[in-house]
Image (cartoon, rainbow, N blue to C red; front, side, top):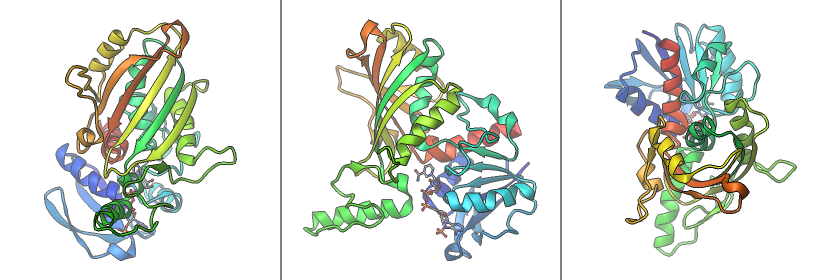
Length: 333
Ligand SMILES: NC(=O)c1ccc[n+]([C@@H]2O[C@H](COP(=O)([O-])OP(=O)(O)OC[C@H]3O[C@@H](n4cnc5c(N)ncnc54)[C@H](OP(=O)(O)O)[C@@H]3O)[C@@H](O)[C@H]2O)c1
């Protein structure tokens, strides 16, 4: 059984790791919980035990076989090579290595075969990318995707544990008549919808949007798919919802697409027009599947080649910890 390190164990993704590893009975010999100096010595309930968090150092990885990293890109850039040198395989949740040629970028339902090509580091895709590509992939297998247009409605906890706390405290403040001030986000997040907080590129896209474009092409192994993404934050605690329009090479029948999605691994269709039941971020919170609904023709695409739908997924589970643990399961299979 592997010895496992969790870098960033006290964070939003770190805590989701505990739930996923525990639920899936991941066969670990030892868990080593690592975080910053601030958390060193803290006791954390972990897979049925009380474990003590240690401060991350260059000596943290002796005897570790698998290291899950979720402490931000700069920590991954400094410490992932250290972990690999100590003999571990790193599964990284940051964007530090995702586009490196020798780093597989894996969604296990899509490209599990890529796991054999690693040189010590495997990257977990961006959360919005995973939630979007999971339903698109089975459709792409039957009818080649030419272009995707996506708008995201992303939860506050996508920016970490402090952002979630900020949403809660600002919401209380506003309800009590107060005026919220920007904190983690550049604008108040309570009762507000705003452009994703990642930095803007020179061309006006933010970094989250650029990640969705480049990562989808890498995961699909198809550099010619056109992708237009607009990423937004909404004042919900958890789970991202996305509105997607896909242009295919050939005509697509929405009823047949729905049947394909109903059979797709990791996807659950909620699409009851009569009852008005469609995916919500609340439904998606705390579950493993990506929910899909509002499946319909996109009338703006000629030749009946367009399909619209919405999808919602827990960005801390399938968008981060669950996908990473599924990658680890491929490694030890
Ligand atoms: N949140 C999401 O939905 C999501 C989804 C996919 C990917 N990710 C990625 O996952 C990573 C973590 O995100 P998060 O949302 O979990 O953030 P978070 O809630 O802010 O947690 C950050 C974690 O990193 C640790 N950390 C910070 N500075 C450190 C240092 N100098 N040395 C060692 N550990 C340090 C923190 O430890 P302390 O508690 O001691 O400060 C904490 O455990 C990021 O790269 C993020 O982009 C996040």
